[in-house]
Length: 369
Image (cartoon, rainbow, N blue to C red; front, side, top):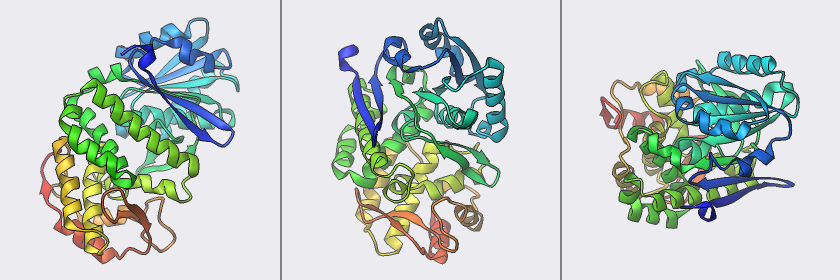
């Protein structure tokens, strides 16, 4: 793959537009993304795992700028207000002006926190997403959702703040552990399950190639998922309606992550389990049928993802955490469910007793896949 093989997908938000570049060698292709920076200050936010691997390569493109870096410890548990404060202090120490840029080099945790810090500094400065995990490339880096976790739940504080560009260099996937890589495949499958039945069929045909990290299959999967999400975001930037569909499996998944203190399950693993729970609940409510649930489970298992809840999960605790989901209204549990593959919808007033019964009936396992 060379420069001519780079895929470009545009996210269009009225008069505002930004590119998502997908391909190999993009970190070193600074001519592509450097011109997006308006000022002379840049803060690179990364973590202690990614920075030793890719910071030097990114830094070559920052020559001539006044820049510094801020590093997080690796993991979801570090996506906190305290670390946003430290990132803001790093911007202050840098002397960052209103035309400064924050560059997020890492996975979803880094991107969410860096984007939130950029949204806060001087009420909003530029930032660029440089995702280094599959999950971040196909989901969290696109669409402008930023934020941090609270003890009460995941992503409860944040802001919509769109990036200037997304630089998805698939070379960074070479150092991604298998478990992290498979977690990203959950978000790919989610996009197909929500609104693209043809893509779901494609995934069934190419599951083995994706697990083997075949370059052509990986680029095609990323591009198809990003193109789908870009269309949804363009129609509903701040999640007033259709964009909520992108959260299939997330209400269950976020509850599982929070219950496990963000250490038992990776986000993609929790989403995979959450999608299966949402499909089973849809069945229980008479919205969908068992064969579609079985197809979803088979695909997720072929992609190396868990479909059973962690052992010891407490249904009532999970329901309590689900009540804090951002999609809910004052007195109503509002979930993303489906009527089969490619046909998700928002359902309000979901009966909590039925949710409890689905959670209690869910198979349990002692470890994530």
